[in-house]
Length: 66
Figure 1 (spheres, one colour):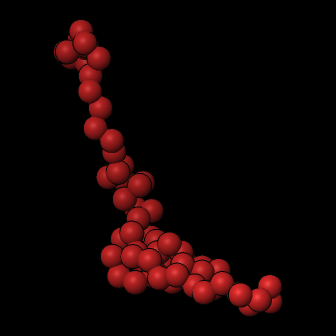
Figure 2: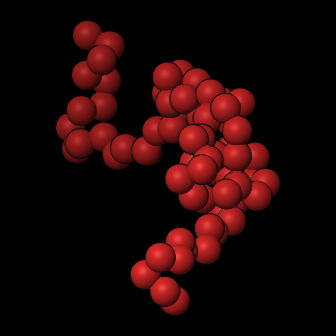
């Protein structure tokens, strides 16, 4: 590869719709395929749809219902 040659763009699955998404500087929504998929993901974060399960610490059962 020549120093003047740009690297080949990769196609990755869109995290929202799983469709093909161009992962290159020319795609302003990367890693998403479109503005719509980017907004869907942002909305999921805002509504706390992406949560990690947590285990309660021992001895905290019923601590919220005082």
